[in-house]
Length: 579
Image (tube, rainbow, N blue to C red; front, side, top):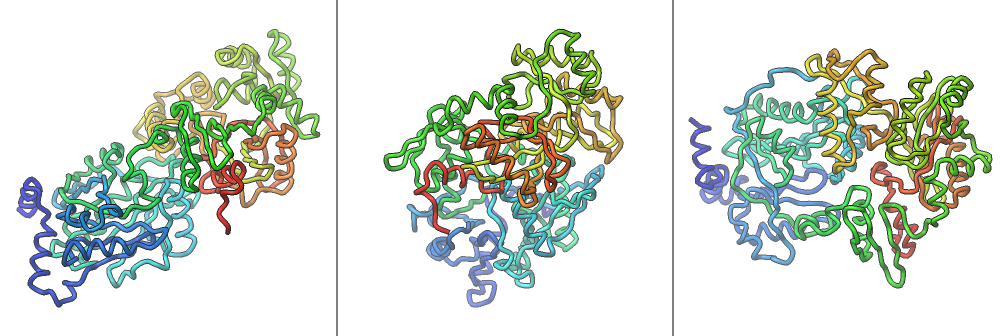
């Protein structure tokens, strides 16, 4: 009966909590209930709109937002009245509010394995959550600002991988009865985030279900959440769990954090993440941005009398010669070899006999096109003449000139050098899936690709091509095989991010010898911004072999390292903000 009445009121465009609380507010204006309520969540405040006596009071609270924070006024029944108080400073949030009435909730029919959910407990947990939030473009949490839980403050939960101990997801929950004596006994969900590189299925769903069942056990009645109007992937999950639209509104203050929401999508919104991260940093510093070709990632930055054209991280500062040295892998090999740096043995693919002789000499080979990017046409750890010849034919789709290189064991390390200083380093790992005992490898690859595409703006997915199939056949499997629950399987041997690979930041532990070698390589190529690929036994060891140089390195891949900041520092030194 309660849920039915609630749904009827939703159809009439009414907010039950607002009606009942406003009525009690009028009856008891001098009670604790009658006091405006604001809950600090570590990144800003949630202002409970219907606890404020009038629109002017709510507008004044929003205008007191602190620098670097983001306040949200929710359950605003008459937003036009609030906006009228400060139309130049406030805006209507273009997010939808959804509600799940707990009488409509149905528990999961199957379990998800490989991770556990627990509360954030210590400084390490907050650092891990903030790292995750930064990867997803969210504001970090300052735990010292949180409203205490005994005063109705929020609780943060995290999902922790059982194998690695890494934090792979997080969510915040708020008990409305404790926060502001909600007569409807509600709750809300905020800040749901899942590591974009996570290969465990179901992390987001489990976090939402955990919050639902936690609040159900506390005798509450519903869970609300706010989701951006065009976040179709999240909306599909919430619809699956039984959430329905709630006709209420939220208001925010205009600031640099919220700018895309109140200005609307500008030309740079159509750019890929690698161009957008640079443009966003330039706009933040007041540098003029002219988008020349959004689809190609081409833009021009101007400040004062300085004007620089860019294609993602490739700029006018990189000469045509330096660019050629990186694009042609034979020239990269020669330049680094002349600089005294360690490189693999290399030769152009020739006759089948010559190729077989090179294989016999080195035992295991890598095949790659001379001019290629994003891992296209690359095959590694080839051990038979037949495998080598097949890989050569696949590589010729991208360039008729094909290279053979000696294969070296080790982790794939990307070192980003900007202005001849190491800014970031990360171990790149090949794409992998985790079995659940039910879905085929092909289905797991498709699901993983959907997550990667959503997290990278369509820039990363696992291709179901000859190289993936070769990797599966090497393990005695194919796309129809079903992995046991929890079984991990690398489905490619190359670790390129565009083909579904993942990154582990190792900047803090990078061995000094590797830093020196990377800077030496950048100087040998005379290139101011470059992503260098090495094979290493470990990031904190000196041993290494250089394999490639990328003249258009993806800065967005290394967040939360300050790659865009250092890039703009190089281009516009006078725009640097004093520390």
